[in-house]
Image (cartoon, rainbow, N blue to C red; front, top):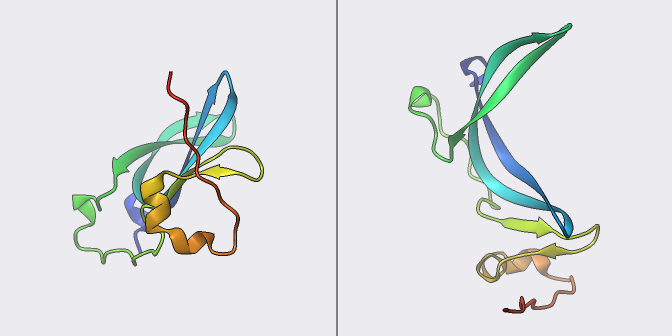
Length: 112
């Protein structure tokens, strides 16, 4: 319904960070509004720029219906390797049902 407006709603946002310990992927599940603008061409390829708008529906879309709710809005985690993820304790408690049937352990970062 909002295709022609230039706005897009991403249900998942991935941030990749590199540091001395390697690559970490931060995965956020929610409603993330973005605006896509045309920035020209490079060769035959059109180029666009994604501009983050926020978690709230933009005022320009007030006449459009709200997007449907999603059961995992607010769930976030860090991908540590191909088989392990790190979840904050408050997020784990809220979404504990996701981990039913899986092994998990508490992780305490060493201070110092």
